[in-house]
Image (cartoon, rainbow, N blue to C red; front, side, top):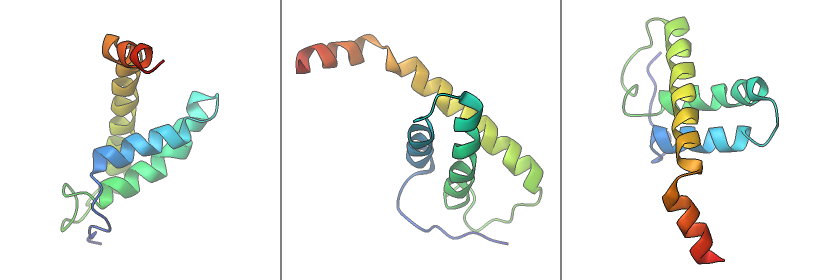
Length: 92
């Protein structure tokens, strides 16, 4: 099945949103489980996949999980950055 772009959001922005929405709970495994379907759908509607056929769905899901994990790691690296702390201090 070929996928078509359903919106103008970038896959990375949608993945970030999925991680944020799923991140409302306490359990990391449950958050990842909640975010993965959102991430796979975002990737399917991205320019990376649109117009192509997913030949190996299991590999695609594994790659989506890695993409999710990398996005979480990236967001965690930014949460306590000096720039973020300065912005919060300036806003107060």
